[in-house]
Image 1 (cartoon, rainbow, N blue to C red):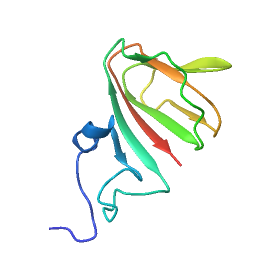
Image 2 (cartoon, rainbow, N blue to C red):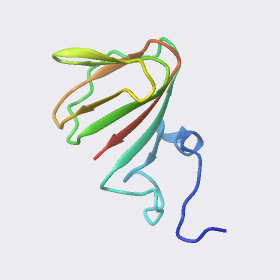
Image 3 (spheres, rainbow, N blue to C red):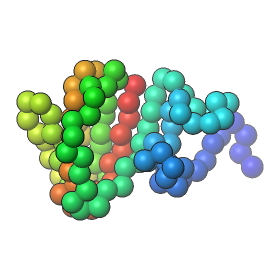
Length: 112
């Protein structure tokens, strides 16, 4: 058994929280995955999945990295399609967004 190392599966650990597996919402608060400084999501989206409503502008910086698929992020002043593995979008606090999956997609999102 490893000491001071937490192992798991991002997909299964985030199933109950829409993919979020690290953040302040993790209980118990003594878990190494419980953090008020960073939140991490393993987002699995089927082709055609979408969020058409604009999010409330987050108070955090957000980074979304495409692991696989094709994923469109829409912002008030335009949109970006993440199409190649490793493509990313980073946006600052106060920016709303919505999205849709143009193909089955996996997106890693980090907020801080």
